[in-house]
Structures are given as C-alpha cells and as structure tokens.
Length: 352
Image (cartoon, rainbow, N blue to C red):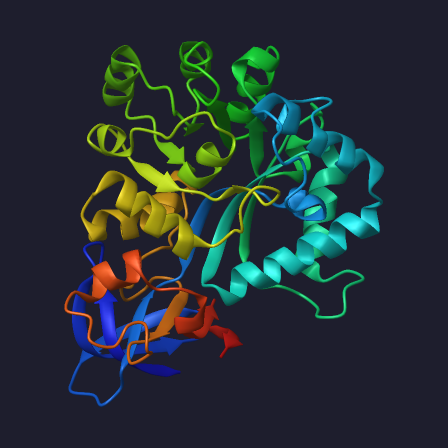
C-alpha cells in the first residue's frame, strides 16, 4: 500500500511531499518525491482517556454536578450502567467505537467501570459481538476497576480518585503484574492530588486544580498527565493549566466521558489549542505520540518501522484549502468532514 501526499513525518511533524510505503502492518519507508496529491497524512490519533461505557447515556444529566453525574457508586452514569443489559452496553459502545475509528482515532485508553464484566463488555464491542457492523480495528488499552480480580483480564487499573478508596493494594498488584495504573486527580479540587501522586501512578488524569507544589512534584517525578478540557468545562470544575503542565511533564489529550462530549480528537485539539495557545505541533503531539508513550505503545508517529496507523485528510477540502500552516490548520480547524481515509495496522478501516 502506498499513500501519496504531504506526510507529517517524525515527532515534529515535518511536512514532507512524497509517499508513505506500507508493507503488512508497518511503515516500510517514507519516500520524498513530487506528487500531485492534495492529501495530508498524519498519525492516527491516540485518545488517552475515555469512558466508552457512557455511550448508553449521551447528554444525560444536564445541570447536574460532577459528583451527581459520575461519582461512584451512585452517580447517574453508574446507575444507568447498572440498569442496562450487557447487550445494550455492547451495542452502544460499538457505535461509539465506529465513530472514533471514522474520525481518525487508532488507539484509546479506556477507564472501564464494572469490573470483569465491564472489561468483557468492551472486548465484545471491539470484537463486534452481536452488532451488525462487525469487528473494530482500534487498539484498546483497557484499564479495569471496581473489582480486585479485574487485573488478569484488563491491561491495567484505572482508579476513580484517591478520595474514593484505598488503592495501595491494587497499586502494588498492578506494579507486580507490570501493567498500567492511572488515577483521576485534581478534577473537583486539589485535595486528592498529593494522595494520588503518593501512589506513584503511571499517569494522572485531569489535574485541573494543579497548585504550585503539585507542578513541582510533577516536574521532579516526570509523572505524565492526561487533560480533558472540554469535559472539565462541561462539569463546571474549571479547565486545566495546560501550558504549565506541558512545561513540566508529558501531557496527552483525552475526551473523557461519552455522556458529556463526543470522542472527537479534532474537537479536543481545537479547544485545547485555543485555550492554551500552545504551538500547534505540541498540541498534535498531545493527540498522538504522547498518549502512546503513556501507554508504552510504539504508535502516534510516522517513521519507518512503526505501526501503520494513519489518518489521511483532504488538504483541498473547502475547510483546509489555502492553509498556510498545515499543522496549525489540522489542529485548529480540521474535522470529520476532512477525513478521506483511516488506516489502522496497515488496513483501511474507513474511507470517505
């Protein structure tokens, strides 16, 4: 498979005219050459924080507080999840996965409620169990919770927050299993940040309320952070200090609860870029390579030998034509209508 156009090569997304040569599931080469193609080729997105189970309850709970919406065990989402059947949850998640695929997401990190059964539900959705449009090709990193027995079937543990319980034992078990441990912190207030950091997590999620001492600890430890600014705005907890976080550690983007926001990395990039005024290349890195690094995956970058997870945009669309800075245009204005092709693992999974 060869894909011609402007290739955003390497960790700095250097625009190179030429073609990406794909052999099997890997990028074999990037050939610089003249081409008549208007396509723009970038890495498929890595959505570093999702709650896909919320697909059964899109836009539920308008006007409720963060705790009323999502706090375990009896927030609205948890009540709705308990009330839904396995089949209903699988069908709803499968539709969200299809949307994510079509909008360029190749990998996502999921905090999956419901213990072993919750992990099984998302695995079934990915496998296309009982849904008419079949298997999805996205790479899922599924972090379970709510059950100490979830680790053998999950890729790690995604804790709700240090104030919600004692996670020392599960943190030890996760480390011994050589799996990921992530935890929400600093979303509602700053009170749970230090207890979360004391667990030495592989990454933190949110950090809206990052005080100077927390920023210093992040810099000292190098603990990565996933920010979800659209979600934080919807739940009225504030927005994360993205620029200050980026100055101290690796920062990735996530879309958080499907109940609150569509899992569109285009929308998350645009919002984060305009909120923080960071360079476009940094924001695109937050939506691709940084999330992959947090998960320990060899993705989010176009280089020979890397997995062929690619997003191809129509650079001559009415939205993108005339862009003077292609990376800035992708980050600040591109959307699903500009997608012409999505390739995951060397296979075309979506074509406009």
